[in-house]
Image 1 (cartoon, rainbow, N blue to C red):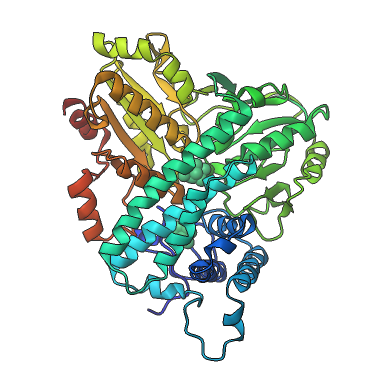
Image 2 (cartoon, rainbow, N blue to C red):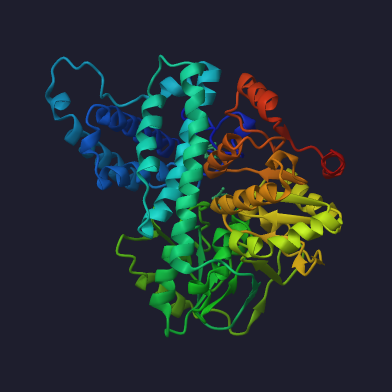
Length: 534
Ligand code: FSO
Ligand code: SF4
């Protein structure tokens, strides 16, 4: 195929087929896409080299693989130099496992790096299955990265990265070999989300309900975006007593629920809505923005000098805060810009001036008796999990309309950045609980699973028999591993939108429909009628 780049890993991919020109819809240019492919190919080579030498794998090998996978997630790393460093690290590591291969004149090819074009040009079903594996482990790597930042690792998770990468490199494998590995992605992601849940709650306590203001107080401030709670904690420490307030953005919002983070008086509130609105929302704020993870969009010239990156995120010419996490340049920028002269009152997309978060599994399960009673008495008729990513496509207003139209005797659990479509709505309460409960970030899908399993046990039925419907939105690769986890758990009849992944081939889609009843969202009216009457 004659094309400059190929990438179809996210929901906004060009023409719902693939980004193939000089740049992707996300702003990733062809040279960056090429470097990301090269990096993935070297990681496959590294996995091949570890095959016979597993005992030589160290924590540093794991870090290289995790960093390399995370860097290729949508809206994370747009920086050629940073990607070249990751490629070099992986190549150097590979030499430790197969030093002979580098000197060998008649290479057998067993430790060769993988040419990703072989994958992009493969038979569409094989390409589909391998894409599910690759995009799934990219998502898991992000979660493993956050857990590792808090000192939590799990060998079953890290070992699986090598197995999955090795499978991606096997051009002689078919459906029989690849399908079980696709399912294993879901299983391993469950382990990884549980690990991250333990890391977050073990370090910062169990989230508790918190009302979060969207007012930005006068004076210097910093907006922090992304998913890394450890970075937020370090920033809170470094800004304590400096007269600089901190506002969460995007997926950092659930941080307000954690006792060990909310105790900082200068963690004031939340700024802005979901990631796709950042170019408009950051345009005029008198403050710096720190990106700890995705979703970074190419910054406009009007505010590019105020955007900082750290961790896996990188963008050419933006200041990157290195591994020492010395946030001095960000803090100095906040002091220099000075913030607003007066308090500024912002609202969510529906006009609400505050949002709630902090309904982690611990909080919900602590009132399980009340919830079960309310279901038995008929006070709660149905639960909806309306969760996942937000994005730019107009069809995403579906989720706002859907939630608005849910009956007053239903509860909406939500998580990840898709909630900004409706989290400022006041839908009232049921039995003293708000009808919309934000369980946290995308990885807190683990908490939702825990709640669903506990309810199923209490009612003596399977999860699929509960009055619970999953209405999910996807955008990037973390959504892929979460979806595979739900399938691994046997959860059926998930509604997925706003469009189905381009990398799911018709045959693989048939498999998912026949075995799991996955269906695309239609209209809120039709879907609600069907879900409530089933
Ligand atoms: Fe959203 Fe972006 Fe959390 Fe994603 S901010 S889209 S699924 O990175 O990871 O929900
Ligand atoms: Fe296109 Fe998405 Fe890939 Fe970006 S990440 S190049 S938008 S498919």
